[in-house]
Image (cartoon, rainbow, N blue to C red; front, side, top):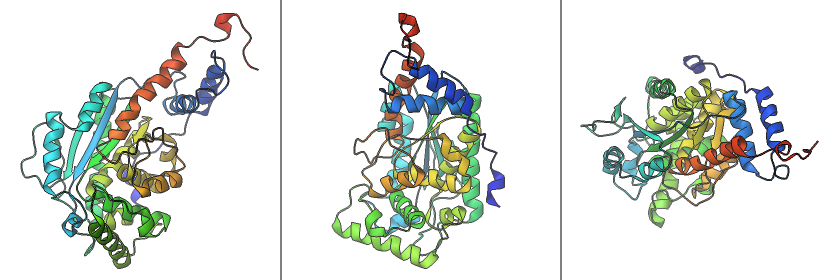
Length: 348
């Protein structure tokens, strides 16, 4: 099976989780009053096997690739924007760069399949092919290409682990990729494409209706099997989605918490979980995107978003925006006084 190229996923450390839960209950506050922040710390403790988790060193992987389906006019922007944004990431001028600087997070830009001929210095050039095929007509990529992109993601995370990264966000750039993400969502949820499709980069009504038609046509033509996640990825996915699948699985194997972004990275996360169910315990949903399919995919994964800011940018921007909340949650656990510190009895 396809899984055997991937490492084993360790079980969550439930003993440390319980120790952290008991510690939080002894802090000078009403039980559970810090809400999701408490649950974040407890989950982080189970992932890292640390009672007070260390998430100080952070990284953001932005997987970049082009999509043949962009030729169908499913985006408000021309396909060249993918390459221009790759250059923008390296210059530090994109939203993700600004947000990353707020928490001193490293931004790792990986080209697994853009149309760029001259990949800028500073980009990890792991190009597998120059864009996927137009999946309205044929499968987006071959199985070997999807697996190579996933292996690229595994390799990127291995490097980051050696650098001491303790919290990872995954995001993407690729004109046309909300079409791919929506198609993946339709396969796994079996919901009508009309209920899942959003306007992506802001397309107008005619293009929006055409986007729905493109996805419906592709699904009817290729009949991707929801029981075979690799097949779904190959038929209607993208190289950057495959790269994120590898990143997510690699991070889980390394006991690094994974913060997913919007629709596209959540589609990658769902594929990763369908391949290896144990991955799910390592995932955090950073925010709720304005894309309608996103909330459906989060429900499918059983994840609650930390932030709802109506964002739909991609680039791991929502994931980066959530980083300060991870820092705050850990700081509260580490620095708050306990009832015992005040000479008071704690909760039973």
